Structures are given as structure tokens and as C-alpha cells.
Amino acid sequence: MSESKRISNLYQSIYNGNPWLEVNLTNTLKDVTAKQAYQKINPNLNTIWEIVNHLIQWRRNILLRMQGETIITPDHNYFVPVLDPSDFAWEQSLQTLAKTQESWNTFFEDFDDEDLAKIYVNNGHTYYEHIHGIIQHDVYHLGQIVILKKML
Image 1: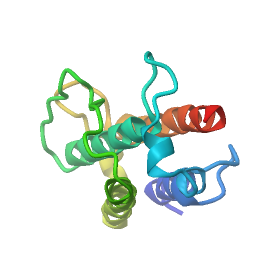
Image 2: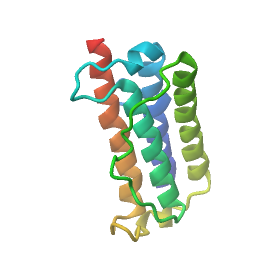
Image 3: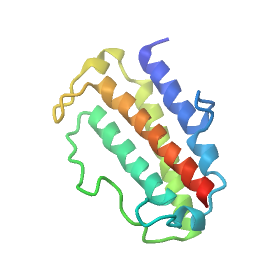
């Protein structure tokens, strides 16, 4: 199996499979309501919804980098308040998260393992580091979501 296929399988397992850490994004978020996702547990913490939207934007950011685009990360680091707390808007965020997974799956279908050594010009990190970085990023925030969900 190619390295990119192993990485793709790992990323997919964190989204909706059976990863080593025994929790994934889909199962963790499936019973979270819009009201719960929007709820501010502590003024110093992000909401579940804000974290989901942050994940979406970073997934897009890194994928665009892997496709050769130079991306400037905004000062807010993709943490922005949710303006529409409706059930429909929450479902849209979840669907958008799913679409980012589909985009990554499509990306990996044609990815050449030799490109893992390519360097992204803005920060000098390899594509390999970026791809593993977005996986680690998802896992980090998945842990936050799990804790926030327990606090609801």
C-alpha cells in the first residue's frame, strides 16, 4: 500500500471510521443539536460550532496548499462567531464538514507519494508535514469537542 493511501485511510478513520483513539468526528457530532453546538460553556472557550467551522476552514486551507495555492491565514485563525444558530445552519456546517472529507478523499485518489517531499513556499514545511499536521489538528479539536460535549 502506498504511503498516501495509508495517510488517506488514517484521515478517513478520524472522520468516520474506527481510529486508534476510539472516537471520530462523525459519531461525536451526530447527536449534538444546534442549540448545544452554539452554547458557550465558558466565555474563554470556543463553542462546538465555532470549532467545527474552524476545522472546515483549515481543512480547505491545507488542501489548497497541497494543490499549489499560496494561502494567507487570516488573523482570526478561522475562529469566528456563528451568526445563524438555526438547526438548518448547523446541518449546513455538518454537511460542509462532510464535503471537506470528500474533497480530501478525492485529492488522495490521484496523489503521488513523491509529492510528499514537496515544500510549501510560505513556511518551508513539506506536504507530508502539512497533511499530517491537518490530521493532528483534527484530532486536537476533536478532543476539545468531546470535552465540551461532556460539559453540556
